[in-house]
Length: 332
Ligand code: UT7
Image (cartoon, rainbow, N blue to C red; front, side, top):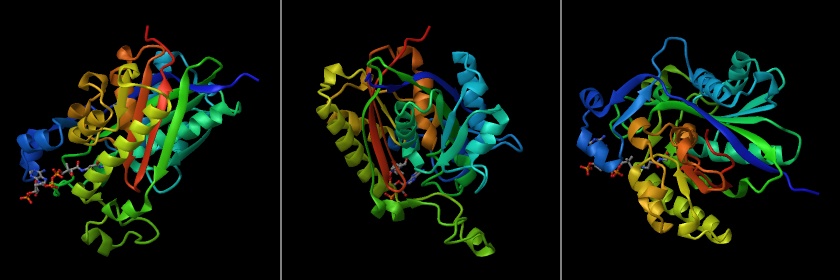
């Protein structure tokens, strides 16, 4: 029997118009452009400021862009996965809300919570479902409105995050393109270093949790930094090795965009050049589940059919993953 693979056949994206640059941030909190640029590599990030709009709207706009570019109709979609940690509300899922707004009448829709590894986890789930033969047109849209859970009085976290959404269409193919290999995992011991304490069943929202500012991202940056570098390096190196991808054979590394220094350390370990790495952190910051598909969106013209592409991410949980793809199309 011919093997069915799952290939990305289109990408879409959306970032809000409002640009919060380092200078404006420096007027809000004790920081400066030089520190943020040197330590993290971010110059500006996008913030969703429209009244009544939230993560599902970011997802809807990215998917609308995907539909326009690929000529896909809403009724053809049979699966929608939304990796996010900033769903509009606890329930229903952002995917249910986005599906309704888009008119996805033939799909089933759900969110997954894997923080910055959300897109990699989501692509793994979607690709396995497509490979099964049961699903023909799946969408994974990494979408996060990080401004909703960022404390703009905390200089150690507020420069890092931004809002955005990136969507991919995943379809079956019997050709040798698409998802070729994957490594996914988690390290639950990392939970204490990166989390949002309140608003769940352990600490339901109360005056006390609000007073303690527990509805914001908490991060012990240095610990997360070290774990991110070693884990993303190990899994990216491992996936190269076991697929016989030498540095010359790799077209693109598409890493999660949390810190330029993390990205550069991973590239060094893989012994690849800077120009083999897709980077847009300077424009959008860390958009959590959206970083990797937003890179596909920004750099789609560079991605050529047959290119060996590795995506890799690390995030709260800790969660981590790397996927090796053979890019399936050329942009017209
Ligand atoms: O995406 C999910 C996973 N997340 C990540 O991968 C993020 C991983 N962590 C990081 O990227 C980095 O740890 C940060 C960017 C968060 C912080 O960079 P760092 O180089 O680890 O800085 P640090 O926390 O060690 O702080 C160094 C100094 C401190 O001052 P002292 O104690 O040396 O005097 C901080 O108080 O920098 C100070 N600092 C700042 N200064 C100006 C911290 N934040 C700022 C700031 N502006 N915004």
